[in-house]
Length: 513
Image (cartoon, rainbow, N blue to C red):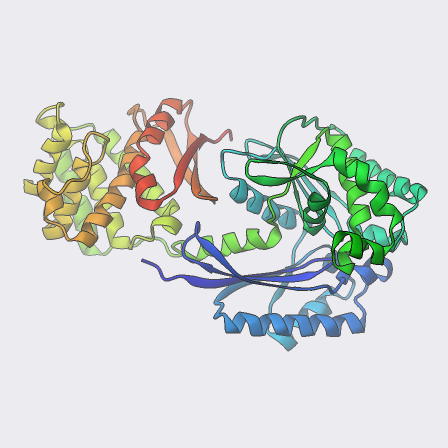
């Protein structure tokens, strides 16, 4: 099994620069360890003068040096540092990136708006899980507003609006009390850009709208709604009632009244106006607050990459012999070879896609293939109890290169390839294995069951499988020729053993593209 890795994400936003350090045990199991934040306000000068000042560059270097020391203390081996809206617009961004690299050792990457939106979206989809798919994701930062309208977890419409809180505060000169005429000006800016970027006005109604960012979390504490899907909610009608009180206060009064930092107090009024304008335009009454964002999206991708196999599988001569002799043995028994070969292909796809969860070494992939090729050979004896007949044939058949515990594992896979038989200590092949090999066998059998279910129709409809990793669950997106609903239903029914072994839930969905 793979050892845990220490990973980190840095988000150099227009308002603050943040570091998140975590320990990843798998693509699904990421333990937060440490968070650090510097209120640098990268956007404050850029949105007016379009350059980072020398003073700001020095403060940034200090922050990144501190981040590097923290990462070293935690033994971080993999990280990604990204900069967003303010850095995209700074004319001296290349000098900024070079200086950070030279004086802190951190490689900073200025990402485009689409990548920024994607990372936040992936964090939300993972946090909510497949049972609560969002219809809309709103990410309000200091420099920009990213908006994604989704259908079946896929982007239907998207928009990038230059109405971030720091940008509006600096360009409209709104550092404190906001008068009604100024509030109306902010509302008109947001509304005009929404209409220009999303002319086909979405009507979301009661569907889930998610909002990201520190401003949303702060305002949800001021105008909370009933929790939904286990998440805090921002109730827009209550926020509308409390907006005048927010706007009439200066920064110091907001800090005292609402218990917030200065760099939150000076923009929270602008954020509130923006959310209310969005709510009216999208026809939503509440917004869910998952308390995730760009950093969580980065950490998920690093963890996924850390536990995924980087190189293609290359079998040695012994492994190739096992596959060849297993295939030859299966063919001699005149079974449904098209089905057996397709289940083998599906098993490989699942083994590779689920590597970040199961962490099984490459030698088990060969045994899984062999089990898939042989899983239905028992039909040559009798259709009734074919899984038990198949176990006997796999243990005693002429299969050169397959011997000892490997043969016992493959025979066990044949016995447990469907839901008719569960691993038990009195079964001949399974009983001969060590406790470790028994666990590996159960895990391989759990994959084989899903693969066999995905060709329940014996029509080889499924052509590809992709996995996504969410909160306590794994989503399998299946590409197929025609309607594969029958196969997906059987695969879902066959997922119990996998869910038990890996303590996750599996969800299946046929790709529409």
